[in-house]
Length: 362
Ligand code: KG4
Ligand code: ZN
Image (tube, rainbow, N blue to C red; front, side, top):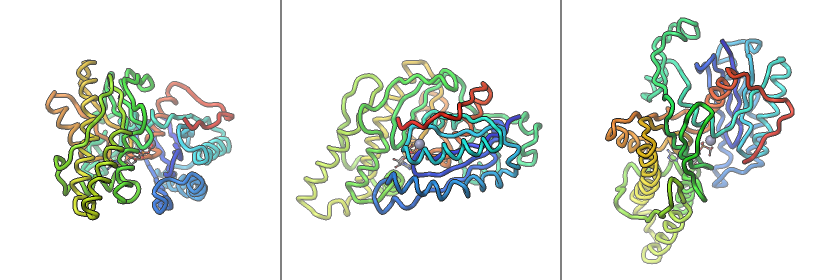
């Protein structure tokens, strides 16, 4: 049995988690509010906040897991991609902490971690309270015991399956042959889906990050109220910069006629732009699954928290009698639990990193 401490600090969330094998014992996240007033992440402020948060967050994760730090077998950390200053804090901390304990380190790719979050197991009570689909274990009382670990009835994806990875920085359709064999079937040639949503929110002056705000306002709006063209891109690739520009020009023209146009149509605008982006994303995912004869489709990354993306994926999968894998909300945006599960699979393979390994931004 292994106990892994995982650390995530690639962007603006400082997070630490403890896993016993593939079971999550704790997952502490400190989100940085400081960026809201600037309408985006300020790298210098992010690294400073990571420095302030890292010790209490790691301490909290170890205490919440109910373990002693001497029980840790390895320390996993996000090596990249991400912001250099942010990564530096987590990477340096992970290395020093592991060295002090005399334990090995495991480097994790942030994007792979998002995808592998589908393999995290956790306790049943927690899942019920959030009402979310999880890889739940049946009996809280047997928590952390080996009997518990062997008695679960998991709902994990099996290989091969397709995963749409949609975050603030990436948009990819992946075909997973095994945990670390992820074939890129398609990806964005310019902006990421999350970036496009955040920019649409910025154009409407809604605040940052725009994704959750658009999602909330869209619930009151009509997704058919306005239509925005999506580009014709070959294969499974995406492009989002054109959608953003047509949204901008559309609003500029309407604002000339009515300066209150955005205010009056906020919910309909949110619902319509959200529908445009979600439908564009899922159309290619459906095509890819049909082409590859895959009957299991997952979503991962920050944008997978989007309610329309979640319900539409479920609808498409029901239509084809495929299985949809939709992560619990807490595993959608950045967290260390996903770094821990990726670290666990590397631990099983004995893939440890050298202490001199630097972070990478791309
Ligand atoms: O994965 P993530 O936390 O960070 C990166 O690795 O980029 O993703 C952040 C992105 C942001 O663009 C944010 O607006 C978006 O995820 N996001 C959402 C929702 N929640 C977060 N987008 C749409 N609907 C949401 N509910
Ligand atoms: Zn992320």
